[in-house]
Length: 220
Image (cartoon, rainbow, N blue to C red; front, side, top):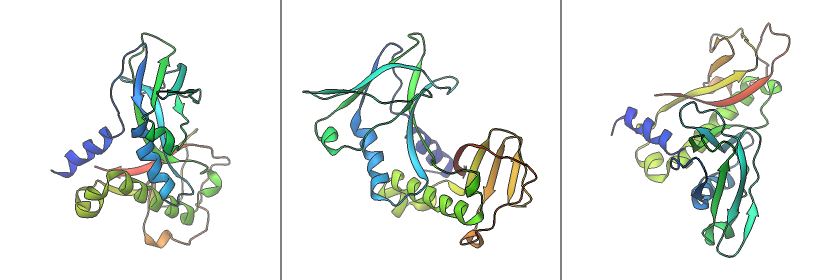
């Protein structure tokens, strides 16, 4: 197994299976296992989120309705306009072999489920090296936990390299730091140990900055 193969395998962990356009059913235990990693860790920013996306474009598949079903009960599924599934961390649902039933709004949409490691509650006010370093280490811990004991502990050298974080902004931005590289609205922040405890804000000529998404910067 080489690094390229493992990187592909880790990406595929995010896709539970392709689904029919009309209605599809996914076992809750796959969500529970990933939420359990979050619950056991100490994460201020890092999250693993679940989305329903178009297979070809990866754009959100609008959800018409959904529910969480067990043998004896059912409850409405909570989701956002961006087709993010807001699932509870519930041991009883896992024990009761619950399933998640989702119906896309467009019956012709070919959709699939994916998970995304990203940051919540990380804003422009957090663009200092200390907070970025913290988020980087949280992403590392979360990715290691999701990879499982065998890979992370015994074969960690096979994991793709995480060099820092990648930030998508709503508008093109630049930063006065050689470890930050930007192309239009997307910037990579190469993180090292010197960033720890450095609370100075990164310099930018942009008057206002709005963050759209923050993900790990993985080098395959």
